Length: 496
Image (cartoon, rainbow, N blue to C red; front, side):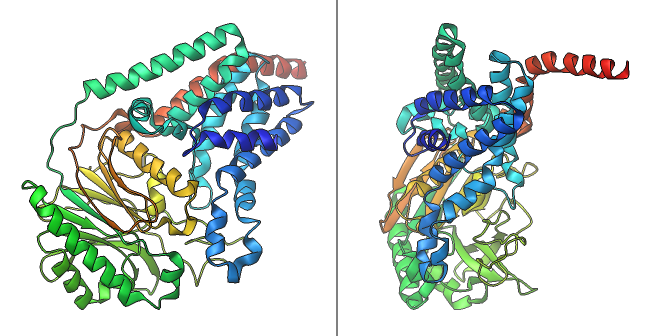
């Protein structure tokens, strides 16, 4: 089971090997059917989940290695430890699906239960919905653009449901294989149709100048080169704005620095803000990642919008979804891994209304992975900006999986997204999730991109995760039709 789960992780970006799920799930469902009890099925599901998440999150070890002098003992435990927490998410579907009779009803029940329990990961600590199986369709290029379009209707969790169903179909026999082929064709036609029938409007979104300083995390933590880091970002901003102005074509310019790019407390540093404003002269606004201390002395991971020649703080956003074990420490841990008392969470997503700039929704790093929770529904923005620092995870699958989540949010919400990353990958996507440009890993530079317009609010944007929840529950109906009468008969016998 461990090996089957680990091999299934090859379906995630950047490998994107969806067909591997077919034999891996065949092994799992056969083991569930062969188990002598629901407990045995749960154990096998747990082992599958343990293998899946250990392999899928192997890159967490890189973050520990950055501070190996202090947390060397966590190096072999980081990925398996997180996988142990997530593995029950696979154990519950494995156990509960046995309530349905063997065959297609049990397979349907398993797909629906897998989706529902996978969606419940938003409630684990501060939430950890990383790598839902729906992301396996984020293939490079135009093919990926086509295959992820249904997320505009059913979200990435709906894609997860469809993915599991497709992977299970060959177990039904020849008809199942034919249904798999038909399902893939229908999926592709639906995606292609959406691309054709929903052309992107010109809109009034800005040209964004994404600044990638490529500062190693060890250099940031050491704090010995803060002045040099600041000067590097000023120089990159200055050159990026100078190059972008002639190409803007009357669009406003917005320059974006990554998460915690400013090496200090920007809210308290008037001189630094004026220097940033001078470097960004000609732009309507700058979006700067920084740490700040609030009125109660709590630390917050923030992003600030600076405008005008004096670098006035036009708006401020505090990260609301904190990274478990990185910015937020669960109280049950017997040891301390988060510096100090950790971060304080913000109040939730916002929409900024900056002078001369279309309304924008800021997102910091990790919180872009939360499907259905990235937009203020009462004040819908025209575009999203995501600042991040993936330097912790090295040149691994981690930053690629993170980037895939950004792309999926663009499709779900019908909004273009600009992403500035410290060491990469900085990129921009239009409202169809098509990649407009990128600046690769471990490169220093500037990326200027004209964002397209926003699409009308999507079906998923209107109803959110209720759609995949309803779809997943519908897959349980055939199983319930067999199960509930049986329960009724047993209850009647007991009364007699």
